[in-house]
Length: 426
Image 1 (spheres, helix red, strand yellow):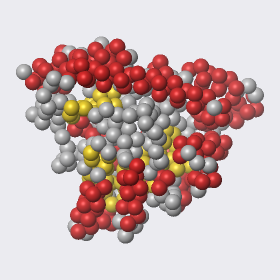
Image 2 (cartoon, one colour):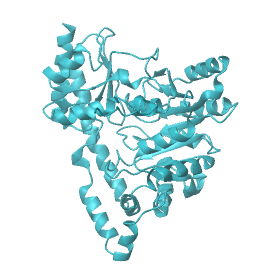
Image 3 (tube, helix red, strand yellow):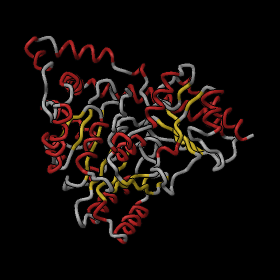
Image 4 (cartoon, one colour):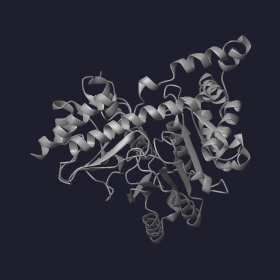
């Protein structure tokens, strides 16, 4: 007797065939291929000694050790959330009092992706609208798709999302009688994944003003994903989008220690509008009862010791060398290729490259097959960083990561990639 098929939910169908799963699988199974695709951090920079030292200090006293090995709270460790207030104040170049929030508005999550998922669960119904930059973080596009959101891309330039284009889209949506469906504007504010673009300071204030002005039927929230904020290699840090929201009611600030400290620790946090906190607590409580307690204590320890800032300074120096290696290799191997251009980021982990329109870069394209199977180099196709079917979606772009490989391997990977592009051009 045959066994009947499983009846999967609609959400399982919407989550099928995620690009991130394919990319990670390819990176693991093809060790001889140079990965300019993986958005992983450089293993050589992971703070093994610092974590070992922190754990030893934390577990010195048996009673205290038992406490951190027990369940924590849904909101996150109280001492860590107090440390996070100090941390945000340092990043905003102000005092903790000037932040105008308390630890009660901070929620600790197991990586920033968990926060993005929980926000999607509590804010969106199927058919609701989220406005995003074109291009944007493709994993969040998958999250939104998984809860049935209509994602609309807004045009961008070298200074980030274009505010006039955002206004025009909101006006179009209102004219169509659908403004009530707009729940969120999502922005990766600094060194965006995938483009490396940073939203200009004047646009940070503008987007807050726009969200407030267009909150006619309900509050339109801005989700500021600041995952790469601390990976700056040149220039001065500016204020966050969140800092321009004096009410602290329109902007959600999402930050993580995955890129700046350790992705294996899986500690991130959100600074939330006060009336959103309990909703996130409820869904997170149902999900995991709270993020791992020991991991939170490790982060709290390194923040208190001052050694976290030392680690980030070393990280910035290391990644600056690798970014410069990728940009130098781009100049060396791509400058003579007609119609090929790339952006020069001031931070983050990515370089965004655009090819002539006729050269497609997707997973099934001749270029991707040539690069990954013949020339031995992988990249992320740019088309997956746009909502499916968006008129702004381009088929001839790619995201290149300098996070994983050494400067020497990055140089060779860029040579291989240029070789593959020349082959397709011929």
